[in-house]
View 1 (cartoon, rainbow, N blue to C red):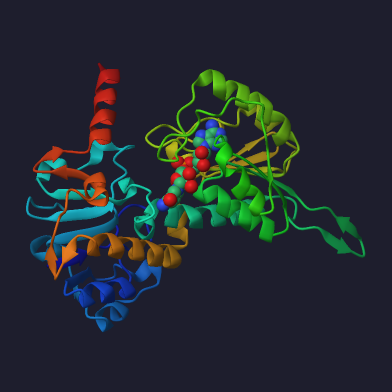
View 2 (cartoon, protein in one colour):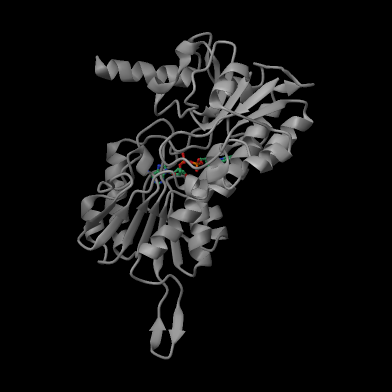
Length: 376
Ligand code: NAD
């Protein structure tokens, strides 16, 4: 079996799907590995570092011609053939139209791997969101007109800044931990009441809103879409909390849906000038009404940032973690150097999105159908 690692071509993407340590692990499992020249450079991994562990450095055309399995962070830009396997983050619930199913290639999307205990080492959503949560706070801290920690100086004592994290999933929990380490007073809110303990264990206050949230979580541990009446009430209650906050980090998401609006224009206007909102849901439409993807919006002195693809800005660490996820997923499908696709395994069947020229994943099919219905 030959695995090909392509150089990422999406704008601003600095990560690489396998780092040298991942290549070494595949070689040990008797796989051959081709790496496109310069694939790792922007993530801090030289061509020599790859060839030192036994990778063959090649062109994209070589990978297209010779690889059985092509791996990428985002959708590989080279055209796969029917006898090839593609593994990447295809984001099929957001962009089902972009899946290159017609090629006939077998495609696996890492973001659809079920979030089970056994799949933890393959969970790219967690490994990358964690880094995003960290960097979101650092970006917010440098944009803020205040410092985060309390500081006692001869010229007076500066009180600690107040940070509020909206959405306490993987990114949110890391944001809480980071803001705490920097000395802020941190509060957090999530629609899933189950995270209260996790928030408190990180030294933050859990904001309790008098809202009915018992049905807010689905069987998979994700938030459910809750209806406009709920979101309107939520915004009204959150407005008071926001007015007391210097730095807001929003991370709220509902899989397969546009991100819920948690911060309206009116709520942002109630914040003190100089405050900052970092909207980590900008890629999914944003949690703040004012967010513009990849831009800084200034509104009544409040700055709203919608940074995109933060993990890519931490490309070395993000690639190391992604590579471990990829390696674990890949080796789960290999037995004695040969492909062994076990469709009884929920990790394999749950992430398979296309095969034989068709989209085969039920949730992706549903999203496609509902979009077609909307278009009429
Ligand atoms: P996500 O990115 O889908 O959402 C981020 C957070 O936003 C979630 O905590 C969600 O509850 C919250 N949210 C959604 N709507 C909201 C609203 N209106 N107001 C406030 N908050 C809102 O989620 P994620 O970070 O990827 O994690 C989702 C779940 O998966 C969590 O329960 C997490 O613990 C679980 N998980 C399990 C495993 C595992 O066991 N292997 C691994 C990773 C994550």
